[in-house]
Image (cartoon, rainbow, N blue to C red):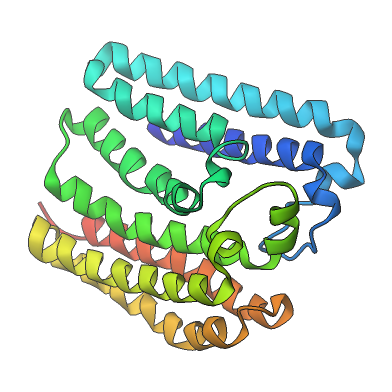
Length: 256
């Protein structure tokens, strides 16, 4: 049920984003890539816009229903986490994207501390420092993923009033921030193992960061070229998926 609730939240926030971007006209201005600019579904089929909104609302309803069930069975301590998650889902596109720093950290906050600590609270009945440290690699990586994927959309985002970090501070500064997030992700893996008592097998996730040596120079050199940046964006997606996969396997393969 935790997994279903998390997937429902993800479906909802993406469907809301599709609907808002279509309504604002952003979809008509972006140069779509495999990693940015939306799916293109609603510009191609405008009559599906009401269905997208219904999907968003149904996903949100499913997430809230599961969350309230957990609050009833596990206690009120879960309510602030659930409420924060719901506010991020509903407000991400129309409110969060208006603030550069909030826009930067909101995706990682949802996929990192809120999901990990919420899951720990549901399954173990408590939140721990180890759980917080375990959530940080996802926090930094997902923030970096969304940040890099915003690079091709700077001008359209500016037109519709979005103020992502690239819009507010420029691509060069944002590229340096992206590299800093990767470095913090590495440090957070080490901190989780040596500071949080997590299994040493989780350090295997550091192998994934070998990909960064291939794409970080691309990001720093080609941050203002959406075409040349696409290989880096693809490798960054692979890194963002590989690190938590290997990190999780470190738990599964460690005997209790």
